[in-house]
Length: 493
Image (cartoon, rainbow, N blue to C red; front, side, top):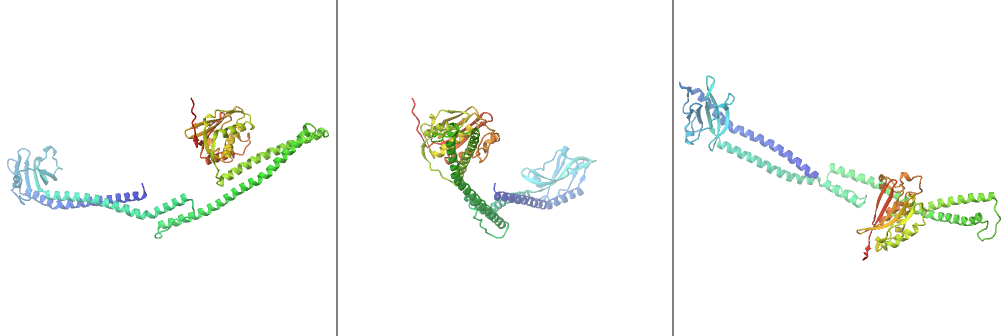
């Protein structure tokens, strides 16, 4: 429910309660004044009858025919032993009697005014208890016809209720319109804020209209806040761009010296290895035999060279990963084309056999993707599968790693399953974050924590998804889902 509607309902309820209270007050005021004069005449008639009336020797209440007049007052005397003993002529004229309450209902507090009906005629009646020796024996009823007054009050009540409903409806309609007009600047602020949010343009400002009221000050505050956010965002964006440029440039610059270092180390290793094993140089010419001390030094030097080569290889891998992430951050668009998926997966499966591993390498059933084509960048897709396979080998000290394929609907799935150390389910949402590594693997396996981040980027670029199921001590299964561009189902007999 909008603020506009809530405000209108609140105002309408307040107005309705006020009008009801006002209408009730008017009604009771008019009601009191309408019957006031009539009650005064009735009480005057009752007092006059009491003064002029007597009891005969039989206990009958003797009253004069009239005091004020038969046309104005309707008088009836009831005796609970003898019934109605006397009535005025106007009651006989309308052929009606005033209703008489049962004697059991009458007590000392019963005397007073009451609205009754004699046939179709409404009356305001005063009932006076008649007593003899403190015992009730009869009832004096003095009434006045109240048809006109009752009709007037009924019409007044109907008018007040109808007016209340009409006024509340009109007030609700006008209030809704006025609330909408009053809150229109807030709607403009909301629309302008939505444009800023959806357009990602923090230079846009909310237009300020109208007087310098609360809404105007709110717009000024929001515009000031947007200005500060824009300044901060631009500063952070520039710093982020500079950081991305630095990572990209540094990655490019580091690749050359690292390649040189690795090349020279491999050259030295090829030159020194024959000397250490056979005592000849690389050309096969004889060389003097090395003393035991010289051989020990060369062996120690070779171990240092191997360490340098290993670290250089690790740094090259890290630099390549950083370069891939720099491409992802810079909005690099892969040039994709329609590729048959099976040959690409088979190439990965063949080369994966050469990776360093302790686990058994199993190639499962790949027939499901035999006629499947995907819109992909072949090199990046190979890199994607190698990341998952290398990751599986890394965390599987024993057991096996299996690669197989499945198809579900318009999605092709590449399954990489291992029986390694697995991980806790709470860690799964974070494994694709940069530099994140599960606690159990730290210190036990090498890595930078960037591989799965690169894999997630490649999957997103191909419009795919990844499914992870894992259990500690039981291994992990990754299913890489890729949208199928074309699938020719084989006709098997």
